[in-house]
Length: 526
Image (cartoon, rainbow, N blue to C red; front, side, top):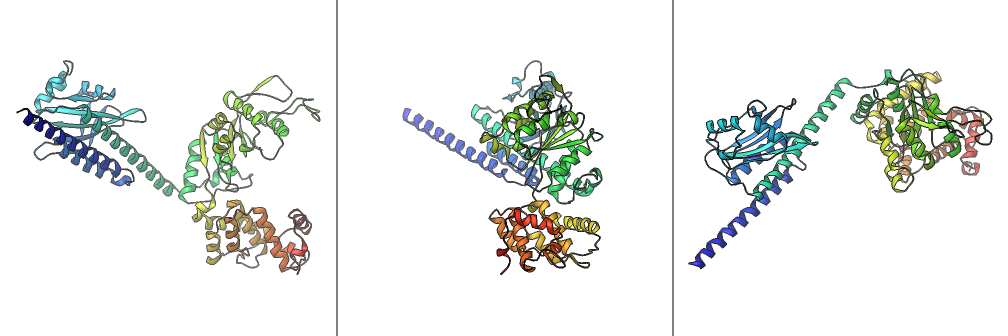
């Protein structure tokens, strides 16, 4: 008899273990389905998953609830019920209809009711409602998004009681988190798609917002990537938030800084620029913070720094990654407190300046190498904007070409009306290591040498593309291009059809460039 009981116990244990493993496998499969699922299919997959769970665990109903925008109602967004079991819809749980139930969920408590008697005395309304609908057993698990309750996952029965084991509860909580993550991704990606559609419809171009005194008059582009950058600019411009503009050399970080300033509340004040890479450590400290007379050799008078003269306006710190470490602490203090001292002074100055910084370096790498302060980085990157390289927005190249052809034709008194498809294809297929700045230079040279109404592009882009893959510098590209032109003129610089005329450069300026680039006439005269 004892042996028979033992065999029954072993059989029951084995069955339980088998069911447990099957359920674990089911949960893993459900989780895996949501990983790379397009957001448009998430609702359907949640419905499918609820059906699978309810049928596997022999529940009678599974319901997913989402909190409404006002935060006072949990609405049914997904549900599966077994045949013969009524479905619920609309408002499922609100402050007014089930106050105790709602308050418990909003406090983050999982509600487990094996039967109606588990309801506490204060749940008067809930007890009456449960009696009317033949309520038996239920579990309702709240889930959070961003630290706030966003909804709940519930399972229940109307015809039998359930004992909710801890192991089962933990697995159901895991499923609730899977659904919460999926819903969050769906909502975020749906909003992003709506935003992209809005940007397409509005065709955001900030041409009119940029002051025409600046070197770049317009931000040109209709690609999704550049529209997103413009959206980021529009979002942050009216605020006083510090902005860090990141991007490769030549992408036009400065023009985006001007756009932010011109759309800000400080637009009636000037925006000053300091290139942190162009000055020595001593000079840059004086440039930023000013100095007193006698502060160092040659300081024969008191000079205000850029922070003082930019008071009430904007200060653009270009190449911020080149700022010396000893000045980074001083800059951090200005960002935190708006205070600093001039060189050679102990008197504290207080200013109201908005900082826009730019860098072509990866500052996180600079931090790891001990070249940049982590606390300063987090201050500067309160609102980061990444300007994409030209190779990532190639659909903008024809627009940029048109803009620069018109600009340089007007400046040079030429009438260039067309660019061949072959030329455009060459420009689009080139990788542009120097980005927009390199494109501008190429078009300027092309306008210089073009005769008549067609743009004549002489660059060998196939060779340039190969060179760019081996990290060839812009200076080397310029050197190669000048050598190529000199070869065509057999080394002649001046006069008609000379290298100076072809390049559109004054002969004396060209000689200086030849000397600086180390070009030998032996290289060009055979």
